[in-house]
Each structure stands twice: as C-alpha cells, then as structure tokens.
Image 1 (tube, rainbow, N blue to C red):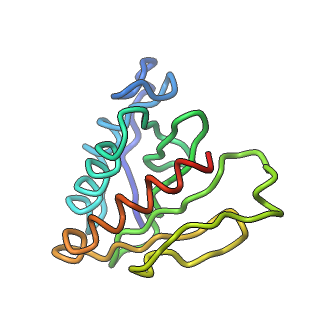
Image 2: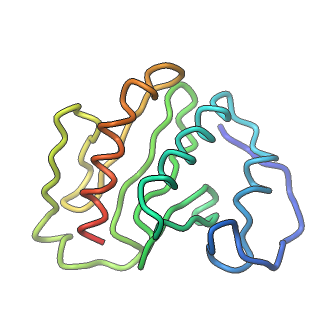
Length: 144
C-alpha cells in the first residue's frame, strides 16, 4: 500500500494553482510507492494535456481539476499506474445519463455511468499508451 511520511501542512497553493493547503510536489517527494517514477511521469503527461488542468492532493493522492476534480491517482495499485476518472465530489446528471468517450485502446474499466478506472501499466507501457491516454483525457474534459 502506498504510504507517505507525515509533513506539516504547507498552507500554500500547490503547483499550477491547486487547492490551498495542499502541495503535490511535497507529497510526491515523500511518496513511498514502487511505481513512484511512473506516477510522476503520468502526472506530467496529464498536466501537459491542457493548460487549464490544475493539481492538488485530494483523497490522499494527487488529483486533477479544471472547474471540478476529474481524476485521482489510485495509489493502492502496486504493479500498474491507475487513475480514477470521475466528475467531482457531487453527483451530476451524468451519474444517470452516463458519459460517452471513445476508448479504442481499452484503457478504461467503467465502475459507474460517470466513473472509470484508467490503467496505464508500468514502464514502457506508459509511453506506448501515452497518445491514447492524452486523447481520453481531452474527451473527459468535455464532460467536466
């Protein structure tokens, strides 16, 4: 299981304008996870998809937002990088109507109409799936 050392609250904003009081950089420096470098690589890929994407530590993991949070690393996975894609903390109409996103690479395993787990693998698998992941994120942003 991923753990991180306890750190005093930073009181400031995270890199790229995240929620005050969270610091993704500090979180990542202290993250003890076998895929830490892969998680960092995916973090940078996701931040590069669109300039409106911000990050913060939410739900005890690096999370990403535009108007609302939409993706959070699933740090319990120890052998492959995974992110949970969602539409924020509050239920929206998409919980009933669903979200339609092209996923020709089969990255997403749907857990609800508006929530899925995206699996990117580890090591070179991430580079192989990068273009498909970036396309998936761009489409997801249309729904949040």
